Image (cartoon, rainbow, N blue to C red; front, side, top):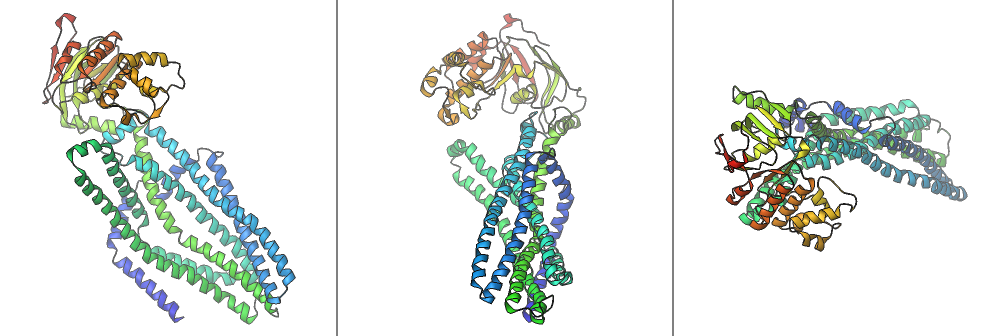
Length: 627
């Protein structure tokens, strides 16, 4: 009793010390509650609505089967406890024949027990995977639609950070913890109901009241001294995402870093990011250590002492039907009741300690819900969305007397009184007026940051039009080729036809002709059309740019936007590529500072970097129209 009181006093002291010296924790919890867009219940409701779109779906099937297995396991636990008690009776009575028969019965009952225990882990994983499938597909539908994947990180002040971390890691952990939490809550609840009923038959319901009162008080006390696990979980995922993104940045820019000799500097950045993560983990581990000591002492060992105290009157005083019973029968009662109390104690322990799982889940739920909320605000269209309207609002606030934006669909490209703004609301080009009909090639020049790429972003619909009138063809009639072409995973055929994916070789003859036009026939002979490679590593810079030009010829759009896309190609091949564009009827906009390209263009749009522009007719005999 002295040790018990000493332990309880020590635990209480630890709790008071933790509370009094954790004002920062209280403040952080308040900030957390203010910053949350919804409670755990509201966030879970949103996510479960997505995971369970209808009553009969794959997650519902796994949930039902998982629940049935949990009930079966409890029934088996009680049955095996009864058999264990009867074995104890046979040992005490030295009835070896009965003991042998009970051992056979025990072995037979353990067969379904082994199956149920293994199936529980299996179904828990399948349940988590089925939920993850629904949420992943929903995230992909939102993220890869309406240019959300571009706008999420480029437009608006409320950018989505660490999208890859949230979609891959956070969603996986959320589904896994949700499945575990369901089992860790439902199983002990059912165990408390079934096992309490079995114990009540043995010793009366009043005796169990003290057991449950102990756990109720313990649970409240543990919640009182509990650290902010939900905030820890959210902070951990955020810092993990930052550490991951730093490594991704090094991989994406390894050549530039190598040329600069920036290995030491990058190491400092990576180490600093990991040190921040390590500091957070050390803090969490310290809290977990203190809470673990209190949990183990109060919940595990304390429950055992309470259970023994409850069985003593029956064993020593002959109460609850044990009066006049033999020693083997008392041993059967004691062993069976001990096994049931151990199971009941574990059930109550899981219920009391479920706050840990709930708070871990709350942090992940907040991040996943925030991801879906931000994606939802951007999906379903372009105009009228929060990020797009924010950019337009910044433009109106920074500059007065700008004309309302109007976008029209036509067979030509025409800018009328168009001001081009950056996402931050800065004016890049003012009062832009020009018209380009088909087969009238335009060369665009100017210093860096003058608005050349911004013009194409507005033309391609990546940025909203903030003022003036823009007439342009339908989106599928515009095609953009950057200086560093994007090479998608797949075969060489996929590189030419991207974003279209051909399932057969029906167009290989046509693709061979395109590869001849860009002087890459040897590549087809060397690699073939069906070999899957990491083409970004296989091809040289010039080969990548020529593959991109073959892609342009395959799609044959009305207008092609070429952003320094032949900088690594020799002059003779470059001239052939531009002549091919003319032969195929592709009107081109070219960003370049190379004077030899003026020969392939009819006019030049020149920016000065101060918002001004100049329209130069390179070949007046073509009689281009200008507004």
